[in-house]
Image (tube, rainbow, N blue to C red; front, side):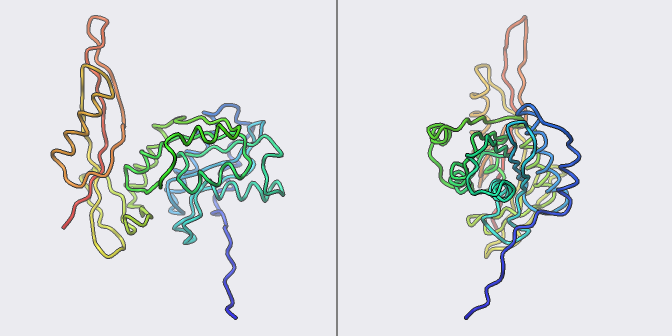
Length: 277
């Protein structure tokens, strides 16, 4: 009979001290998200996992259990930040059912297909998200297939859902990950790495049968109509001049005002594309 290895999910050593540095209750969703974003950023900086973090809080805004993405650290595709935080919270509480208390899950990015299933079954009453799935997919992550109205499915179960809290700050962690050459671990990319156009870098893929280079470039687009029209214009231009466009996210936006009227909507788009041999 095979002697199967024991499987243990161990948080990186630095997390305890890091979380303890945030003393007291975090009273607002924005304050709680700030901790989560900085956890994700520190996870990238220390090279202990992917650019995602999540924390379970109690009704008073106190940390019950933190979680960071451990996929590459422990070689487990299931070790997403949300699942890590929920699993640890259930161990802390001593129950697989968190509905016995008023617990909230705050996650740096909205849940992927896997985590979307785990969250309502955990029993948490509330979900707060930062970046969107489109933001994660823009640098190559595969977020899986979800219902179009995934938020509605959670609300139908009695959960409260708040999205795009501090989205820009949360999405900036992806740029940190890209600069570090972090692994984009999904089956479609075969373990390719992210890259950024700062310094016009090109980072070759690390793994898989086919070598590819992922790059991120910046496009500034404008429209006299709306931000949405400006985004559409920028994407259209990108797909016309670049091949292998995989996604884009808005890194900044502004309006130009003349005589008290908005005359131009301007966006900075970061566009991800793959170079092929």
